[in-house]
Structure formats: C-alpha cells, structure tokens
Amino acid sequence: MPLTSGTGHGRAHDREILRLAIPAFGALVAEPLFLLTDSVIVGHLPDPALGALGVASAALSALVGLCVFLAYATTAAVARRLGAGDVRQAMRQGMDGLWLAAIIGLAVSVACWPLAPFIVHLFGATGQLATQAVTYLRISLLGTPAMLLVLAGTGVLRGLQDTRTPLAVSVASFVLNGLLNVWFVLGLGWGIAGSAWGTVVAQSLAAATYLALVVRTARAHGASLLPDLAGVRAAGAAGFALVVRTACLQAVLLVATSIATRMGDDQIGAHTIAARIWTFLAFALDAIAIAGQAITGRALGAGDTSGTRAATRRMVMWGVGCGVVFCAAVLLARPLVPALFDAQGEAATELLAVLWPVALLQPIAGVVFVLDGVLIGAGDQRYLAWAGLWTTLAYLPFAAVAGTLVALWIALGVWMAARLVTLALRAYGTTWMVTGGTAA
Image 1 (tube, rainbow, N blue to C red):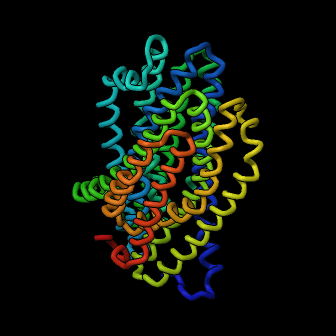
Image 2 (image 1 turned 90 degrees about the horizontal axis):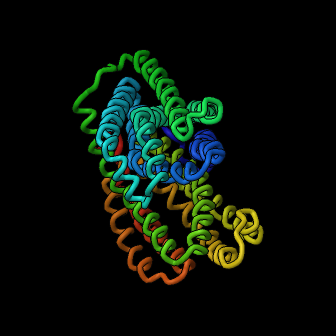
Image 3 (image 1 turned 90 degrees about the vertical axis):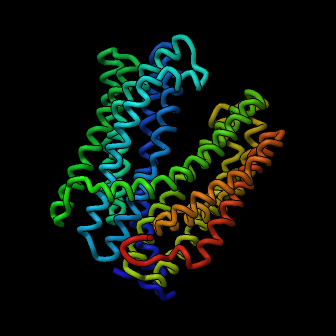
C-alpha cells in the first residue's frame, strides 16, 4: 500500500515508524543479553573461564557479525516484493535468504572447526584460557547455521512489516538461554561447555521457530520451499556488498580498540566503557534504521517515490531528535558514569573527558544510522560498500596520529562525519530510488 506523502500525514508516518521501531529496539537489546547472561553464570566458575568466554565470544561475534547482511538484504528484498503486491515472490525471496543462511552457516562451521585453536591464539589466548576458549568456540560453531537462520528469518518477517514476532522470539530465546545455562553450567557441572550448549540449544529452537513461521507463510501464498539457485546467487551477490560495508565498520572499531589498548590500561578501560554506552544508544538508532529498511523497501516496491521521500524525511527527524535527547542524557549522566562502572583515578578522568565526544556525536549518529537503513532498504548496497571503504580511509590517518583517548574519539567523529556526507549526498539525489519488485 503506497505511503501518503503530504505534510498533513506526518503523524501517520510516525505511527508506522514507531510500530516497527519499538519492537525492533526490544529485539536488538535482547540479543546482547545472551552474552551478558552467559558472563554472569560463567563468572561463578574458576578462572580463567570468564576470560575464555570473552575470547571465544569475540571471535564468534566477529564471524556472525559479518553475516548480518542476511537480515538486512532479506528485509529489503522481501519488503520490495511486498510493496509491489507480489507476496508469493516475496516469500520466494525469503526462502532464498534462508537457504543462503543455511549454506553459509554450514560452511563457516566446517571451515572454522579445525581452525578454532588458531582463531583463539589470534586473540592472544594461551594455556588453560586458550583450551577453554577453544572448547566454547567449537561447541558454539555447531550452532552457527541456526544463528544465521535466525538472522535470515528475522529479515523475512521485518520485510513483511512484522517486528513484533522477532521481539517475542528474542525474548523467549533469552529466557531459555538463561535457564539452560544455569542448568548445564551450575546444575550439571558442565563448566564452560555447558554455557556453549545452552546457547546452541536456545538459538536452534529460535531458528526452528522462524523456519516454521516462514514455511507456513510461504505455503499459504504458494511459494516453493526448494532452493532457487539463481535466487540464492542473487541474494549472495547483494549480500557481498553488505559484507564489505560491515567489514569496514568492524575494522574502524577494531582499530580504535587496538589504539586505545596501546595507550595504557586506564585508556582502554575508559574506551571500553565509552564504547558500551555508544553501542547501547546505537540500538535505539538502529531500531529506526530497521524501520527504514522495511518502509523504504515496501514503498519503492509500490512505486511510491514521493512517499519514500516523505518517510525518509520523517525518519531523519526522528534520528536527529533521538540523537539530541541521547546527547543531553549522556551529558547529564556524565558525572555519575565513572562510579556506575567502578572507574577510578586516571581511568575515571579519561572517561569523563571522552564522554564529551560520545555525547556530541549522537545527533550525527542519528542521521547516519537512519540514512544507512533507508539505503539498505532501497537495495543500494554497492554504494554503501564503496562509501564504507572511502569513509574508513578518511578515518585511518586521524586515528593513526591520535595521541590521547579524546583525540581517538575525535577521529571516530571524523569517520561519522564522513559517513554523514556520503549518505546525505546519496539520499539527496534520486539514483537510489529504483521502483518496482527488484532494486536492479
């Protein structure tokens, strides 16, 4: 159904944005709670179990994080077909995304299993810490296909304009993961292996839930459940550009962490806390971006360019508004943050200083995240990949000369400003506004 584009329909846009964004925010917050729950429970085990969990989880998160395109690209493809009125083909594309997720998941599991010791050593783990990290990583790799199926299944439902079901599945998985971890780790005494098995079981049940929902919907609309090789290849080609984009994002953050680590213990401690605050606030902005993916794909599929433009303007306003609120919140909470995270001495001083750029960058982040979601929803992945490369290159020289933690975050500010310029210039034009059932 086309979006109305008149200025009198701003409230209608707001309702649509909030309908999609609020449940999406809940689902985004639920995901990191998996790791938090694991950390709390594994923290009851003797050292170095918690450190091993941290190393293995970081490796696994990097592997799975590169595959987030399975959610984003699937959302855009399904929403576009839905907007074009072809629900059958929308579900066909959803099934292609699920098949691609299964193939990649199996490939990652098989390829990384023998490499687990090498991967763990890349993070500097040795001795008993490395042994336990390898145990956790290898068990978790068995659940990689399920994790990727969850990403693709989430993308299908978001493309169908449903963000409530992913929220329900995320919350249920979080609760189940916690219960299983308590049982396996503390009840049965399986140690760190029990934590890995608990997460694998929870993710596998979540994947089964998504499969059942998508298969039922596909059958209801007469879509084939068998893999379409051409469709799977097309999904993979679209996903590759998003992999490049995501790899650039991760490279920027990894470089920042590496530089902060070399500055000293106080600096990396303050940087870690600042990064956690940034990440939490990013969840809310990402929720608007997810709404942008779904709304943009559907509107362009319906050929509604004026509605797309109007919805984009409204979502940018929401992004700026949230960014301003977050900026004020960080500045108001700033004096209390060191005590909240038990930061003392030089670490507290560094943290108080770096919270200034963290706060001031929020309005920029609000626009960047929204426009990123809009262009993903439009299927403009190639541009996003090239923009990711250029903005990363703009960031690296500033990061390289950063001598203080504040200077490092200013370098991150340069990166965000570069992203703002590249995304805003693209969104201002019309090249990305391709209408119809496909983006190409």
